[in-house]
Amino acid sequence: MAKEKDKKELAVSEKADKASKKDAKKKDSSTKKQGKISRWFKDLKQEMKKVVWPSRKVVIANSIVVFAAMLGFAAYTFLLDKGFLWLLEKAISGRS
Image (cartoon, rainbow, N blue to C red; front, side, top):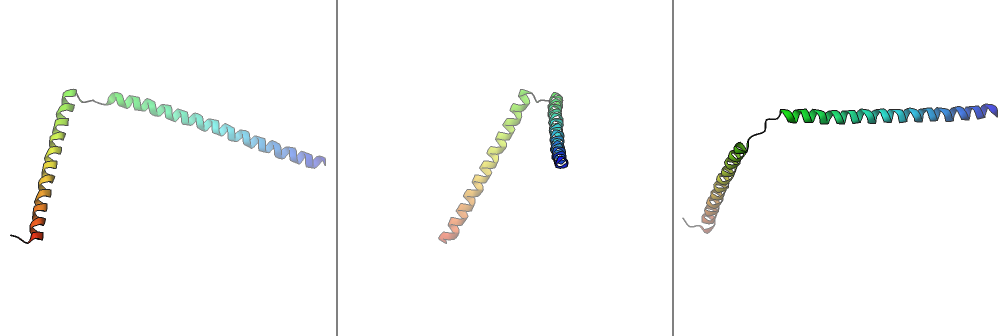
């Protein structure tokens, strides 16, 4: 009986050791993860300082160019659509 009791106590203590090791690993990994996250934000801050932001004048000029290009492509697409519609109507009606 004493041997069985000793074996049970040994098994329980081994389980406790394994559990404490797992807890220690979890703490280490969470600390490492926090270190990685804080390092990422520090690196991000450094990179953002290196960015050359455009001036207000450049942003406005680029926005005007983009808007004008959009209007041009919209007009081109509209004219193509109307042209194909006209051709389709002529083909369906059979008139020349």
